[in-house]
Amino acid sequence: MTPFERGLSPAETQALLGEIFAPWVQELNLQVDDITPQSARLRMPFDVRLCRVGGMICGQALLTGADTAMVIAICAALGGFKPFTTVDLTVNYMRPIANEDALLTAKIMRQGRTMIFCNAEVTGADNKKLSAFSTGTYALVE
Image (cartoon, rainbow, N blue to C red; front, top):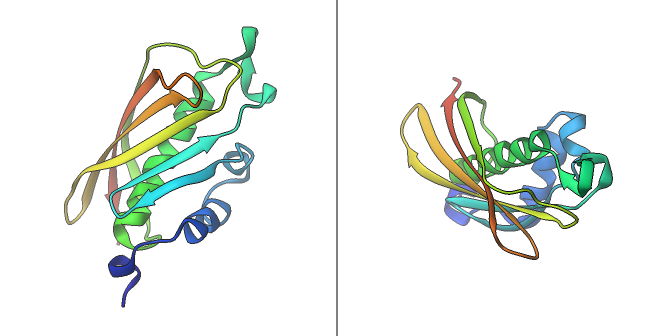
């Protein structure tokens, strides 16, 4: 059975976070909450180092988390890590997340032979309100 057929376990996915991302991304301390062959939900624990005034998590951290969640969702869809690169990444911020963890839920919208299209929703872990919405386009590199 291939990894794609069996899917990636949360432990395998958590290990990817420590293996394929730059050290500064790893410092976000992202945790895998859920993983399926077409989606990933990560938790970004609240940390004052990621905040700007008022205890609000900065947009740069939220976008990095959303991008990372989309990358993890792609790895799940591919059955593991394969080289790919970001082609386009956009974000719309709707409300701040303050003094609580952020949940980053990424889904594969379409997976072609060379391009993968994703979206990610960013919500507060406690209030569950939508804070940001991101879309990403990724190209497989072979």
